[in-house]
Amino acid sequence: MAASPGSLDTTVAASKITGEIPRALRGGRVLSNGPGWTKIGGRIAHPFDGHGYLRAFEFTEDGGVRLRARFIETDVYREESVAKKLVRRGFATNVDDAFWKNLGVGRPRNVANTTIVRWGERLLAGWEGGAPHAIDPVTLETIGEETFGGAIAGQPTLAHMHHDAAQHRLVLLSLAMGRKTKLTFREVDEGGDVVSTREAAIDGALFIHDFAITPDYYVLGANPLKMKLGELAKMAIGAGTLLRSIAIDEDKPGCFYLIPRRGSGPVRTVIAPDRVFVVHFANAFQRGGEVVMDACVFHRFEFGAEFGYTGPYTPFDPVLPDVRGPQRLYRARVVEGSSNATWDKLVPYGVDFPRVHPLQDGAESALIFAATRADTRYSDPFDSVLRVDTREPEAQAQVWTAPEDVFVGEPLFAPDATHADKGHVMAILSDGIREQTTLVVFDASAISAGPIASVPLPLMPIAFHGEWDPKGARAR
Ligand SMILES: [Fe+2]
Image 1 (cartoon, helix red, strand yellow):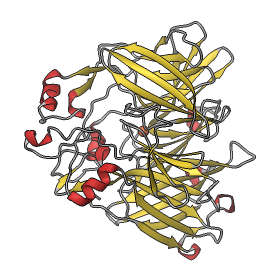
Image 2 (cartoon, helix red, strand yellow):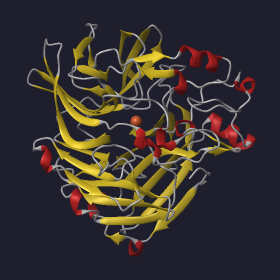
Image 3 (tube, protein in one colour):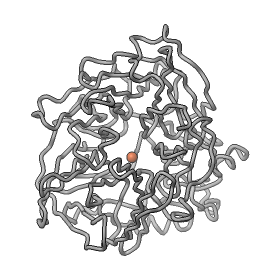
Image 4 (cartoon, helix red, strand yellow):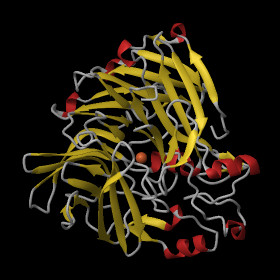
């Protein structure tokens, strides 16, 4: 759906829900963010450039669901709502076919559309090239850019943030690209104060969308880029885009980087058994003398056709990503002092959107939930929910596949307070043909048994990332 759905305020009574919302979830909510408005003034924006649309699915005490959906009121959202057309260029979207009209509109198009994190007194809506936007957790009103006291003002900062629950810190990564990729990791406390800063540099340009943390390291996939100079020149005169100007450098070996969290020790380069292109990490942790990294790895990757985008005049074709090879879920290990990793493929499926226990980011976590595809030759578009128990052989992985033509979003784990392995998993299903979005709830131990509750909702645009928020719409 490319049109803008506008704000939504609706409730679904328990009687309209198939199955029953478990009592353990009531009072909490699923938060989800993604590009909600992509057809803007007759042009279709790339999904990466669509306006952030926050959805809160609140499980009410009477067994119903209250849905509130709001656009994140960024500067560019306000400008384009008034102008009713694209006014700023994005990563992969130009405002006009006439290249000269794309010049001078290159201020960052921060649409706050990628992640949503509850941190302290705020929700943070992350975006790939700038500060996250702070949102009031109760009213869902946009407060404005959160720069953590100016620390990340003007710095390209990743949408993905990591919550180190053991230390009560949120870890952010800002990047500066050039002959070297300059990395600045910052850790903020619940009050938003920066309590740790670590800078490092790696030779060459890297594509970095996500990273992982362990008690002693920040972890990156290598993801070396080469620049297409002709396309860069076109971008500079307003005719190309950033996304069309980059490609993966397949001549470089696959590796991971381990950056010591404390002190200024050197970056450890860890060679992997094959090429590595990581979009998302599931997790990383330390065990004995080893660093263990659970990551979704492409061996080959080409930019283009993300979420079925082919240009400003063509509706998204959700089947298009079929052309891409799969990403596989690996557990990579490296012992202290070694510069070589070994790895095992954890499941035969193509895997993305991996999530673990929300309080075990950076700590050993047995369970990984992810989006996958029943056809193991591919990973996206996703039609299935996957549960991997890393203590069991791969044949034990559980999969539930949605009905035909229904797409599956990122599964979120809501663990029980007392059993880290038990709880529930929620996912959002999108059915463009029958024009329905469905929120489904699984028993986390029995994914393959199918949903224990299905909540019918109006059709909403696809989402990228979300979060289980056990506090719900309460202020604290
Ligand atoms: Fe992501």
